[in-house]
Image (cartoon, rainbow, N blue to C red):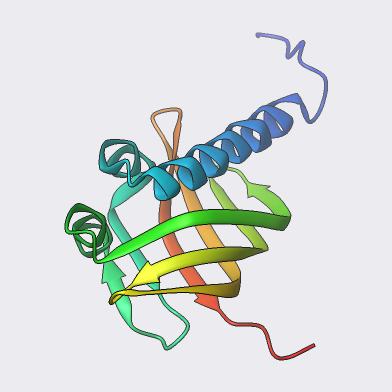
Amino acid sequence: MKQDTEPFGTEQRVDEQQILALHEAGDRALMSADVAVLEQIFADDYVQYNESGKAFTKQDVLNNFRTGAIRYPSIVSTGRKIRVFGNTAVVHGSESDEVEAEGKRFRVRYVYLDVLRKCDGEWKLVASQLARPSQE
């Protein structure tokens, strides 16, 4: 019988570090419209719900970047919390973005909830929900 020599929680801390690195890489890829990186971050069955409840598939999101329909010149993430449950993780936080869409540039603040799945040792984003916080 193999004895576990890892201190309790080490694997979870490694997962949290990998998920944090994935989100940071995702923010950089969103700002640079790096579709190749985003393609690796999003699972094939990824779905994103915007603040109005409209669903976007992985291909919808990628196509918006390919065509230039949306750009994120700036993303500042704050308050990110990562919770790992085996091969599933939930990440929630907030961000202040500068967005270019439909010929207009504006600032927007979101709170978000992301769900990730670990498959073959690799974390992928499978779902996101965006919301605009109520006025503070």
